[in-house]
Length: 43
Image (cartoon, rainbow, N blue to C red; front, side, top):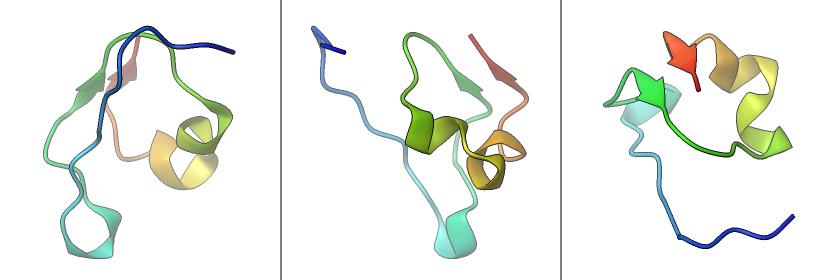
C-alpha cells in the first residue's frame, strides 16, 4: 500500500484521540479494535 500524503493521529494519554473522524485510507494497525472504538467514523 502506498500513500501520497503523510498524516498523523493526535493521541492524549491512554490513547484517547483529539479528533472523532478519520478521512482517507486507513492502515490495519489503526483499524484494530483498540483504535476502532476511539473514533465515531472511519471514512
